[in-house]
Length: 560
Ligand SMILES: Nc1ncnc2c1ncn2[C@@H]1O[C@H](COP(=O)(O)OP(=O)(O)OP(=O)(O)O)[C@@H](O)[C@H]1O
Ligand SMILES: [Mg+2]
Image (cartoon, rainbow, N blue to C red; front, side):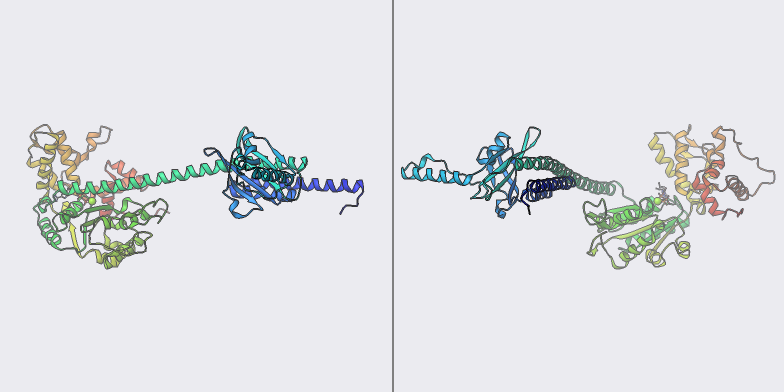
């Protein structure tokens, strides 16, 4: 479209220059937006095409260990050109790599003719051995001109950029400069992409290591659970007689536990206040049943977040949720043939209650994220200190599950309802702690026993055990006296923090429960129903306070 005049040629040249600048700018922006090696190569090659209308170009990357350059991308060549190798030092490409200097060759047709003529002459003279074989280098068989540019990062060669043409006899110096600009762009982009890829591989390898380690850890922890469980089984033989007590209530419970243990797999629901012996009863049921040689698995429902609890119970498949790097068996599977003790079942979410119900009814379950139904043979022993019936009424516990669980209901009465058990229990604990602390204590005197029998034991057997432990530890003589249990009657006297020892008993006696209730109400009101503060005011653990709030059926009065 030139008008032939000098001005016209100038205009045209200028337009072309602006074009070139545009193309280069565009290319550099696009290259800078990616770290993907293939994408970079594609952009570079297309830029070359747009700039010079070159139809043939190659990008080769150096393999330092092999001393070769490998074609990683090309334009204008058949597919199989990719992957072809050029030894460093061979051909235009190889020489450029060796010298790290750009090379421009032209009029190759003539040279080929010349070389062919020489070869012919040599063949004629039967001196064929003298010619070196022409290496198979990717490229046009009829190329007229070629430019090869080293891709350098500082002094380091990373590859070669190669352009050739069958039409042009020679690339101009201007072409060469442009190619050099693109090659520079190309070198740093490729370098970054390679670094990035290396980082990615490292990160992947690291991920894999983390995964294997997690797996190992999981295996070890499962193994540990198994070993611990085996040891419990070997060292702990829970017998019916371990449930100590002579009261009619306890004897009844013991007799019922025998029946429960001999039943093969019916679900057991153990209820009772804190410290009444629910854990103990559950272990007795398992270890006295025909399941004794199989695992006894134990989980406290309130101690674990809901989603984790589900996977603890049912297990999960690999990838079921973040962190589920490996398939994991749940307690039901691990306990196959044995028993699973679900403690504090009242704290289980209603969603999980539904899944537990399905398991109890169909004896099958799915791992979290799993598709297959699994079947195991386990006995469920559940326990709670909550009033499940009340929870059912309040809608907090599924009624169907409640009835499904209490096929064999075991009720452990609070210690205050069976004071006859206090003496044998206290004596049991005296023996236990005497041995543990290597003390001389042999028994309790009558006054001590009377005191213990009249105490209400809100923390039940556990509280009694703790009281005896403390008394044995601090005891001086061979018999524990009421004085050794003074912390039960008025712990305040020992604290030395200015609180009164107690209130004097009026001549006509008093209604102890009423006094107690009064004090509790006062403390609650003074602390504005902050139970922690109220418990502190009363010098009692929060559990005791909570127990009393329940016992007296106390509720905050509406102040508004
Ligand atoms: N009848 C009993 N004979 C002997 N020891 C008992 C008896 N009842 C409870 N114990 C002992 O009292 C302590 C508390 O019992 P356990 O842990 O079984 O109570 P729990 O009802 O499970 O309590 P929590 O509701 O707090 O879980 C344990 O050391 C247990 O061995
Ligand atoms: Mg318990």
